Length: 243
Image 1 (cartoon, rainbow, N blue to C red):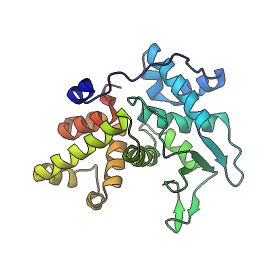
Image 2: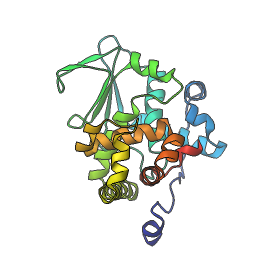
Image 3: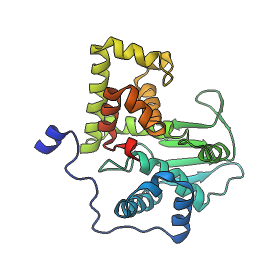
Image 4: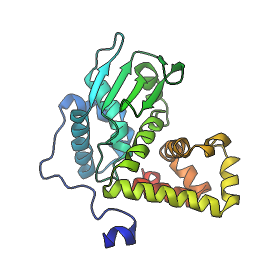
């Protein structure tokens, strides 16, 4: 605990006495469609594969309408969660138990509108459109669904008491305090290309968008807002700008 308090990170992250393995089909999908995985060292690729296999086994994947859940769906959707929590010791996202997949945009009873994705904490479910998920994967940047997983991680960390959740929550609180103490920094963020001003009224949405930008354009965020980047890196315990 003294190490955690002093260094603001877990004493260790990866330790797997009984490592899980992926099928050859899953590995082919990873290599083909997940740039983050391809940038990892051989050792960390094995860690990623273990976590991916464990995450897939832990969650219920549910197809809606004409969707039949495939291995590709499980691997690519789960890889987003594993990437975001790769610096965590505990990576399961406790407030998430189901991933519901629609063929395309779906009607949300929560927002009373059609959506491409949403996180429903009451149902412990992320709901998404497979068509839009696949479309986003073809872009140069990361996919939009980082936002939904970031919301799930944030809310889970507020309830869980493990080291990574505590560091995540404490680091976010430190970031909010930093912005309060430095109104000029907050104003600069507001007028930047990264955020819409209204999200500052909703901490959960602010953090989800921040993590989305942190993953999508780490070098730019690090260059323009080094203090904000540092706190976000501390939250996730991973230096995405180096990947």
